[in-house]
Image (cartoon, rainbow, N blue to C red; front, side, top):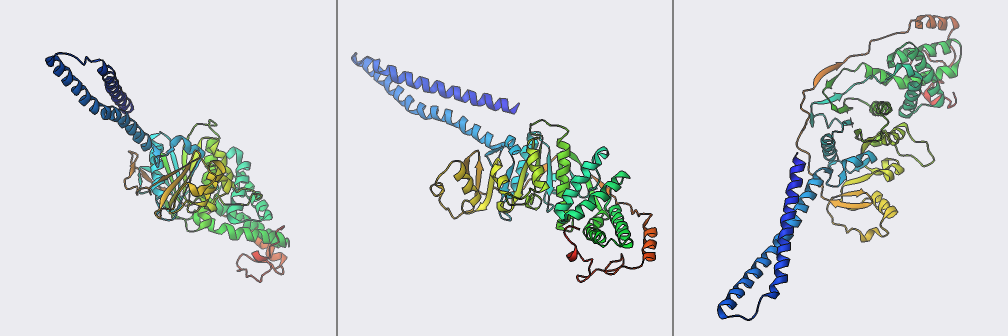
Length: 465
């Protein structure tokens, strides 16, 4: 309704301007046909009339110009208000937006403005909040601080889920190929029993290590020991108490600020991406369906060499573009992301630098401009540089986002309960078999603390198992 009123007002002002301009042109055209010879009375009369026409015409020209320009300026301002930084259209978020700059430059404020625009466009938003900055800014949002990382979304397709979990854990925990294969075997066993817990997985690995020691399979025991060491911090996270907030589903914030380690945060982020991909497979249309704000994206969309295989985070982000999921990738430095992703983004935004960043220089050289030095002069002041649709836009630093986004609901606290402690019944039997077999030279027992000199230390694990 408001848009129609504005459109009618602009059309009315344009019509007034056109009428004023037409009247002015007609009066100037026909004024030369006024009779120049007449009686004194008539001559004075026509002279006064011509003077009046000239006076009116001199005022109507600015009126006509103002009537044309003012609606255009208003229309441009209204369009800019519905664009990110007055430039980037919401529909182009699907092509991904790279947002980078130093700490405190305004990246989070810009992302909050993008969330506001997305909600006005009836597009839901999910936020991977690395530092916990969004929870206080969006009232009524769903806030998730703890999830069941290993639980499949579809128990009928656990094999595919197991392979993806292994791929994610290989990336996060830097597993060797033998470790990844053993992990897949143990995950498959666990999923067959309809269970999903790092605690259960840890017990299975301990059992397998005990069997390997009892049967004198030292290499297998070493691999299991390496996996146990890497899985243990994830088990501790399952015992962590957290409170999720069940609010409006239009904005879902994954608050990772309470997670104690970098590995846990990265694991959460990649599991979230995998869940988004499974969600996208249910609706394969290409329209814009969701915006994902990815804070500190360099931690799970890592840079790589051209010949190196992309990480699972990079593959998912690239795939989701085709399913209507637009990412706002936020990073302090674009060099920490894969270069081809930066090149293929729909918009690249640099905030807070005094000179044109190298990445935008490269993009402009590749697409449009031959000599970048002629494009911009160093101003000595921090600016916002936007590369969008093959053009460079230079704007001021965005103002801090001081207001709060209200979704009109009250979020309800929901306690994320601990995973129940579960043990493997076969463990006492295996330990008894181990005692009967006797200790192995160089083997490690569950109650021992391996040292770097010990043969079963991770430093001595052969990469091929």
